[in-house]
Structures are given as C-alpha cells and as structure tokens.
Length: 313
Image 1 (cartoon, rainbow, N blue to C red):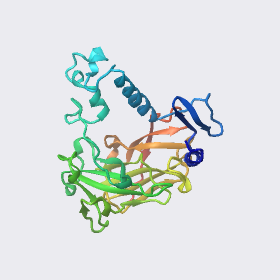
Image 2 (cartoon, helix red, strand yellow):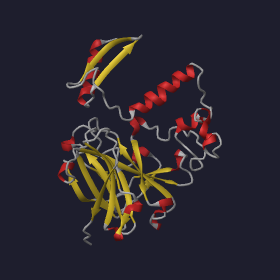
Image 3 (cartoon, one colour):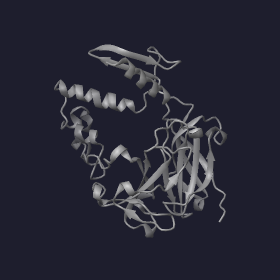
C-alpha cells in the first residue's frame, strides 16, 4: 500500500476531526494513527458507525458461515415473536431494507431514489404537518414535502433544496418534483439539476435539520445547527430558528447564534432539533423542542425545552 496516499488520507480525516485511522490488510495492521488525546486503549464513541459494523459486517460473516439467511424470520431468533400477528412475518431482509408498505406490518426494499451525481439532494427530511398530514394548507395539494441538502461545498453545506411528491407515489422517482422558482413565483421541475436553493446560510446548514408547520400561526419553523464561522460540517455549536409563510421562503430569523450555550445554558453542541406538531400549544405561542446535546455521553441523549413565543404581526 502507498504510504504517501495513506498519509494524505490521514491528514484529510484529521481536518474533519476524525479521532482514529486504522488500516488492516491480510490480517496485519499496516497503518495506525490517533488524534492527540486518543489511542488504542481509549474507548471511542462510534455513533451510527455501529450499525454498519454490528448490523452489516456481522450479518455478512454470519451469512458466509451459513448461520443465517436473509429470508429467515426474526421469530427464529426472537421466539416470543413467533405467535405475534405482525412481528412473526418480519424477516432479516425486511430489517435490512428499512422500508414498509403497510405501516410496518411487513417490510420490503425500494432501492435508491436519488442517484444523481455527488448526491446533490441528500440528508433528506420531511416537513411535519401533524398526524396523517392533517394540518397541511389546502394550496399545497396532496403532496409530501421534503428538504435535502445541496451537497456541493467541500467544507460545509450551505443550502437546502425543496422537493414534493404525490403521497401515493413515494417510491416512484419520476413522481418527485423540485422547486426551481422564486418565493414570489414558485415553480417545479422534474430535473434535479435545475433545482434552486430555498434556504442559504453562509455559516452552513445541518443534515439534522427539521421543519414543522404550525397550523395555529400559519408558519413554517425551520431548525438547523450551524458550524461556527463556517467551520467543518460535523461541528454543531451554532443554532438557528427561522420562520416563513411558505415552505420555499422567504425566511426570517427568529433565533440565531454561533454558540448555542448562550441561549441554552450548559450546552456546547446540539443535534436533531425538532418541534413535534402535536406539542404546539396555546394558539402556537408555546411549543416544546426535542434535541440531543453535549455535554452528554452518548451524544444521543433525549432533551426537552419549552419555548414561549412573543408574536408580532
């Protein structure tokens, strides 16, 4: 293996705050590096990487040893599910595909919807309109609306794109349309390459963003983290809340900070800020925000904070 290329990869990983880099070839360690303060004897929090290691590699090894089959029923390994009307039908393949056509009674794979170059529409999240989309404004029709990051900046992503799809055709790539108009003249196209940004922030946006429609106020509330001073995308010290009358903007700032600790005492970082539609009360003036924060181990802790809004019309 090329040592110079491995060094270059290590430097690139270090720039993204990677803590360790280990390469094993033919059962031998050929490259080993740790960030200052870390080492082979120090535990490192792996977050979602565990899914690939535990759920992916271990499954592949078990399959290669003929210990498990993709179409095995889960009840074979969890006997108490054997007589359950729904769980007894779930297979290993269903769990691996993470998709369902009948409200989780059974699961099937749908493949990749967005295969465009460099994943331009990535890290997707839907707009929350309450249970069964009952709060959606009539002018938006029978569509599901979703945002995706425009992945084009090597350091930090700065834009969100907007798409919509007939809620009866979610598995059909051809059914998705992308916003290509302006806030004054909205329009849609099936060509992702023509999609236009509906939200831009020089400090960057997050793949853990969320958007909730508040029926009581007829406003969209967009939440996102921001790397301070346009830092690396995995830095979540900043926080922003924005509002608009339309899902495509224009957006007004409700709260913005490059240091979330200035508004939520004791916090240093936060991810996955969400305001559930069912937790919006008092004609929209009171709402609860759910999020995960540091300092905490693991990062994925459950937190609630009550938000009281001063409404100016």
